[in-house]
Structure formats: structure tokens, C-alpha cells
Length: 212
Image (cartoon, rainbow, N blue to C red; front, side, top):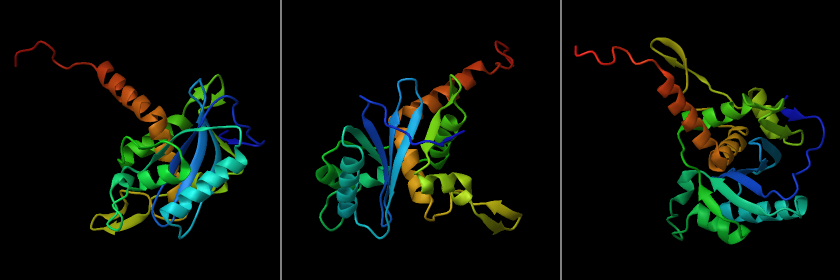
């Protein structure tokens, strides 16, 4: 249900939003948030052994080639991308802005639990029978990641095998990190927080008004 069998056409008159994960294997996810809250994941750009400047240039050229009639409203990246480099004192966000011409912001959080929850929230959402997250079939890496490539590894402990706290770093983790930053920056962070607050407010108050 979350993968379109047909080619997804970008919604007209809606800007693109981009999520990016930096490092030596940077990746970007290109999407749109529809007016009803659904997400279209239109494309992905996955690289290997690529610096930030080269990645920014590749991404700008890729978007201009494949989405010539759409502007990029904003890009969202790892909050660590605001840390300055020791070599030239520029942050990854500043480099991305300089070489793409787009506005770039750090995602609201890098908390692994929140990053996972925003994706789960979209996957569990149906709007008028349509999935809250629809992935284009051309996004092969993201699809394979959802099918098991993006996963937690078991680690041995004194009490037996346990899940590692963070997902295993592989060729699927970087695009999925980029997807998480896209959803976080695109407003899903506030959606999840609102659900948590609403859930807490609905809980019964035990022994309210009792003085012992």
C-alpha cells in the first residue's frame, strides 16, 4: 500500500521538500507534503565517498534536471550539520545553502526514538483511504530499507541477545536517516508531540483530590 505501482507525478503548484544525511556517504530524499497531510516520496539521491560540496552540486543538478517546474521550499538535515568544520569553519548547512541556493534548516531533533516515531506515524496514517506515506517505485534504496535493509542488530549481553539501541549503519541507513529528517522538518515532529500530549491528557487521574 505504501509503494505506488505507477510513476508518481509531483503535485502541481506545491514546492519540494528535501531531507539530507551528510557524512562520507550523503543521501537525499525528495518529497512533497500534500495539503491533506499526506507525503509523496518522489525520488532519492544516494552517493558514496562524496564530500559535502560535491554532494550539494550533484543534488542541485539532479533536482533541476528531474523537477524543472518545481521550486525547493526548504531542505532539512542532521542537526550535527550545524557544527563547524575545523578546516574552513563552515557548517554543512552553510555549504549546502551556498551550492544549492535553497534554504536549509536543521531537523528539530536527532533523537532516535522520535525519528522512528515520525515515520511510523506516517505509515499508520490513512487519509480518505490513501496512505499517509506513498513511496515512488523508483526509490529502490528506500524500498529495500523498509523491506528489512534498515534494521537493528542483535548484540550479546550478560542477559542474552538484545537489540542495539540504534539502527545498523549500512547503505540503507543513510537514505532512511534523510527520510526521517525530511518528515521531522516537514512538521511530523509536532504531529507526534501532539499525539503524546493528547494521550497523556486522556489518562485517568488516580486518587485525585485525596489527601493521603
